[in-house]
Length: 71
Image 1 (cartoon, rainbow, N blue to C red):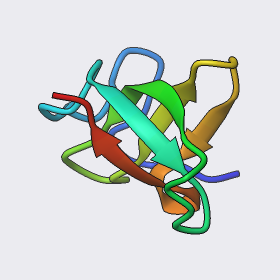
Image 2 (cartoon, rainbow, N blue to C red):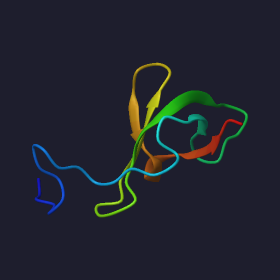
Image 3 (cartoon, rainbow, N blue to C red):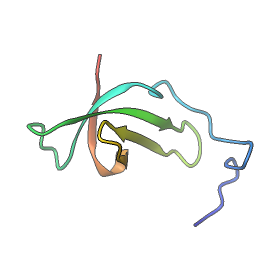
Image 4 (cartoon, one colour):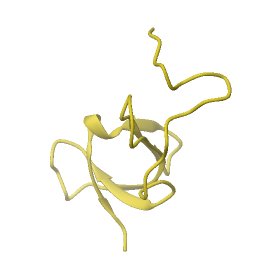
């Protein structure tokens, strides 16, 4: 656990332009196996976390996968 200065009950990091965008996600750079998802967190300030909700209900950090935004 930790404490981040701009994450509190009524305070959250500013969100970027990727928020709520559809994405295709793969793991270990295997683009033959992808799963869709939506970016549900896109911090543009500390702590710079980006989270994707996959279509099967799981959540992954963008540091755990590779993704492309669906146009």
